[in-house]
Image (cartoon, rainbow, N blue to C red):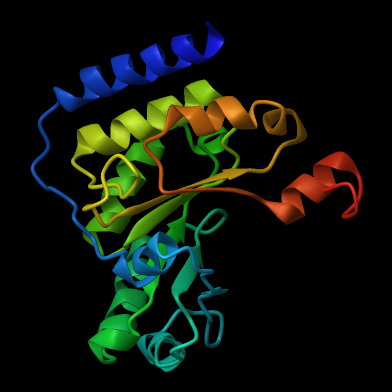
Length: 212
């Protein structure tokens, strides 16, 4: 009964938010990792490098030329600047198409930023060229359901088993000990592309890397 309730909640949120009209449809290009995942392969990503404490087109382009890199992880959890997304995007787009990695942007924790600011930032980073969003510290099935519903209502074409032709990546991270207990219910919500634990935060939360 509990799982059914979660699914009904997710369907309700999706129905409400899908009635909202947005000007832009975000299609993205997560194909660099989607093709690998659909074939059952492993993906390799790296944090986007800085030069003199700044993100640059040159550094992004240099790393994008490495055909071993499947995705860029642009961490904006503590230092949000949407223009940095455009800078990294420019670097990626300067290399041949077959070498272009998927650009994933990690936003601030929803509990810290709030839902309204989080949803505003989703639009901002997608407009500047992100191929996907990383949501840290997904702490409950209800949080996952709300985000999944909003992404679809915003017009974000999130790739998932339910939508195999879409190309935006929505990446949920479980990073809190108490959230691990709800991992199955979070997974059941759907509407996301990747569900993963955050080793660093989780290990800190449980007290040791071995337990994490």
